[in-house]
Amino acid sequence: MAQDDTQTPLVAQTIDEKHESNKSSNFMVYLTTFVAVCGSFAFGSCAGYSSPTQASITQDLNLSLGEYSLFGSILTFGAMIGAITSGPIADFVGRKGALRLSSVFCLAGWLAIYFAEGLVVLDMGRLATGYAMGVFSYVVPVFIAEIAPKNLRGMLTAANQLMICAAVSFSFVIGTMIQWRILAVIGMVPCLVLVTGLFFVPESPRWLAKTGKHKEFHVALRKLRGKDADISEEADEIQDYIETLEKLPKTKLLDLFQRRYSRSVIIGVGLMVCQQFGGINGICFYTSSIFESAGFPGDLGTIIYASVQIVVTALNALFLDKAGRKPLLLVSATGLVFGCLTTALSFYLKAYEIGLSAVPTLAVTGILLYIVSFSAGMGAIPWVIMSEVFPINIKGAAGSLATLVNWFGAWAISFTFNFLLSWSSYGTFIIYTAINAGAIVFVMKMVPETKGRTLEQIQAAING
Image 1 (cartoon, rainbow, N blue to C red):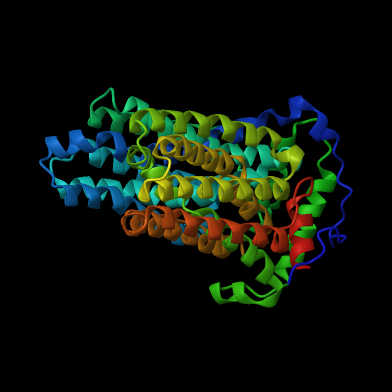
Image 2: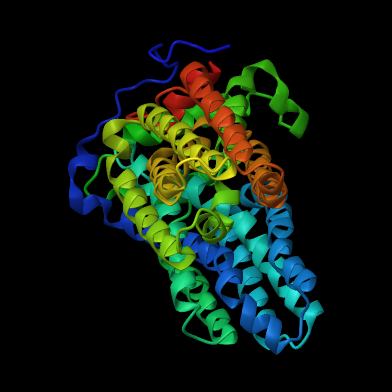
């Protein structure tokens, strides 16, 4: 099913790129990206909230371990609901409208958590923030991909993952210093910045063109590219592609499985499977206990983990448009294999009491190699490619499907991790090794290089 990545797209490739080299013309692109990734920071704040607040919330509200576990895990169920509805909402009310709606849910959730005096209101608030996370996880990368010029699209879309990592780490650190209700108030800040900022940035030109708002389309594209930029060729390419898609029947969910869309759906969904089932959420959620079971201080290990993750994710964003998506994915997946193997070896030695002095060093080396490798590619790039490969007429349904698969994988891995670890600590990481090895094969066979192409060129090449 794989196609030649070098085949000539059906859409013309001669867009005038002078406006892309004019740094001043990209100001609105950068501002719009900043506003959008406030949603990513809100996402990370929600994800990182439960870990540092467990002891204080449990004590203040007199919750059992099971009740607090429900509070923590219900976030993922909210995110799955958000994932299912995110595509249709973004198609119906626009990318900005979807971001506003998810911000409202996030703000309402944080307020419920702040005022909670019992489990019901606490869980309702957590469910609402989870719903917002599910919508943010789809809409933010899609919005950025649709407004960015092709030479900046990879870097700007990868900023989504960077802000999530930064927010999680921020919550981990600040949450140990302040009261849990105050941390909930701080969680509202990125949502307020997002809602305010949306008044000053344009809607996605591609969505405006798709919905027939041609005057608004040209105004938005002009605002994004700068008043002196020549947008005629880019505007014509977008509109020609939209007109081609409008000749096709209106798509339904089952249409995603038609042959003409099969490769883009397999790529988008397959990368989400590779990202999640390689073990990231089990390792991320239980980093401290992994280090402690290997004989290394858990708090120190978590701090090192968070610091390394932010640095490498930032470097990934800077090099994504230079190195390319596919090479970074292959390097990332290869590193994940060696990281899992090293960690498996440490637990194998511990289980059979062989070279026990080397166990902590191997465990730390394996986990850090894993997170460096994940942050170097598999963390951000699946979201970048997901935002690039779906034609705009199926982007809502296909994006919802890919995001739902991602959140289901997050729940499945985090739920099963402790059970697997109790069955066999080294066996758990051998399973993840096999999955990550499969990811290497998948990337080599199925994933095209999308660097330096417009969205229309990518989709025409894949689905042509």
